[in-house]
Length: 137
Figure 1 (tube, rainbow, N blue to C red):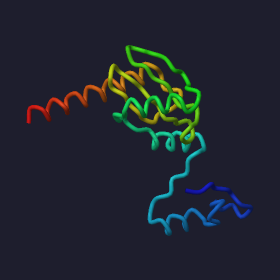
Figure 2 (cartoon, rainbow, N blue to C red; figure 1 turned 60 degrees about the horizontal axis):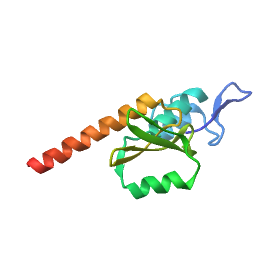
Figure 3 (tube, rainbow, N blue to C red; figure 1 turned 90 degrees about the horizontal axis):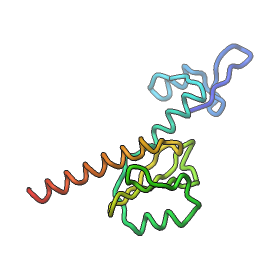
Figure 4 (cartoon, helix red, strand yellow; figure 1 turned 180 degrees about the vertical axis):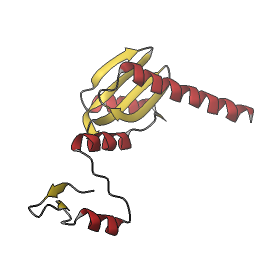
């Protein structure tokens, strides 16, 4: 990954590598994709988003009490909050509780309450199905 700059000779060079697009392609063995900063930021954020994973009540409480929570509240029976410290770009760690189940995942700090609840409900249903299969197997 490199930031590109057009020099006086009209060629595009990597700001950090000092290499042309052709040299970068040859070195990496890959097609070089040139995108603007906004598109890059969206791709970078997407690469850090995770699915909800079960955690302990202790982990949930630890996260709740380490930094001031962002958007702490309950929606569709799911209590959740976001860490105020961003993981990278616009992505942060999110913690949720549904009944006696606790979840942690990374997503955009501005994820809607609707989308957050849907992710947790899907993870909860998936976990319930897995437990059900384990008991019957």
